[in-house]
Image: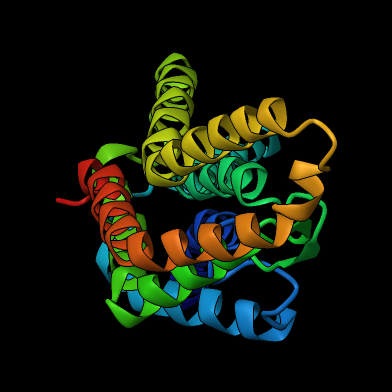
Length: 252
């Protein structure tokens, strides 16, 4: 009897750990090179121990065949990867906004490390991503990510067929919406760039002997940074509402 209980607990423990571990490998703030692998492992193990008595009863009995166990394991990993990719797509709106802003400000060729994308990105993209990451944790939005992970067991019941078609449809719509939000976030800087380039083009026609765009580059950078400083708070507020709205469907 004791052997059976221990076997079932270990089986459920690793099933929960598979879903949580796959999600934490992709969720912003928990994934990335800046977070130690040991820290991520400890967080996943701690969350698994907390959720074991809560959602452990939702799992079907231990499959008698290896194929059934592998299928269940793959299903749990797919759910975790889906939730992790979903949060990454929510963050993608800032990457799009940073790209547009970098073009208008004139800092597209300046690169720095982006902790969210885990690669070298334009300075504006990395700046927005890092500020948004700080805002997520300072407003306890990371608790919402963890709660969505815990409540995902009500939406994606272990052992049930996964709605893969809904997965792909949701992610495709979310990617389109992220692009639209990125353009909206960068709208003030895009308007500034349109006015600035129009003025520089007109000045270039009036004084063709002057290298207008070369002379005006410092002014473009300074004015663009001032516009970004003014619009940055409302951009982050809109992003936080967008991030919260994207996770709320998975919270019960």
